[in-house]
Image (cartoon, rainbow over all chains, first blue to last red; front, side):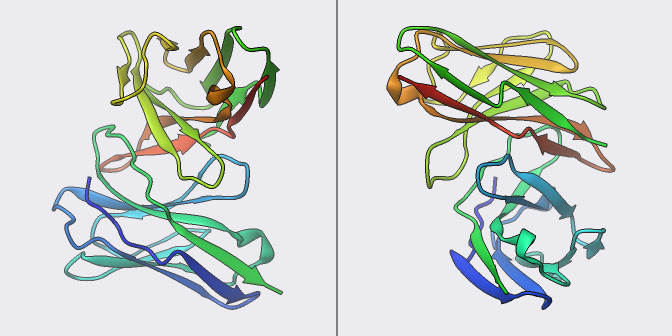
Length: 110
Length: 117
């Protein structure tokens, strides 16, 4: 699996958009970008994934650059409940394992 | 949809005893499940990949005789920590793969907190 680089921590004001960056410059053509988050003492929660097109669901938007070397997860209106560690992961499909890095600790501030 | 449960959520046991943790995919079938553990302030570490009806594949450094994995059905995988010791105290998390468009997505259980006294 390709390695990813994320900032260790970020702050975001409640109600504002949270933009979490991820670099994955060695991503292969068949690898997807996945985002998960882990709220303290809980299992990781799936957020979104994409291959090369931008994706949006009820939780977030995923913006992938045209060269696919980086992506940004956008939480449009952050709430206090969005405080968590966010993990950006790249992996091929086909039931391959997920390798977690250190993620970004997002703190939403009132 | 895509709910994964774990049981128990928390367990305390004496050193030398065995502990079984169940992982269930509640609303989908999962041919592949994964087991992770997480120590305080660390990221998740993959322990093993579990495929229904076959032997689990363990990551390097994980003792297969200590961490027994059984994936007997498409909705249930179990992890048994045998002869548990205090250093096995950790947060154990399972995940189950669900087929999605073009790829599969892993959904995680809520985790099991194991404390070995």
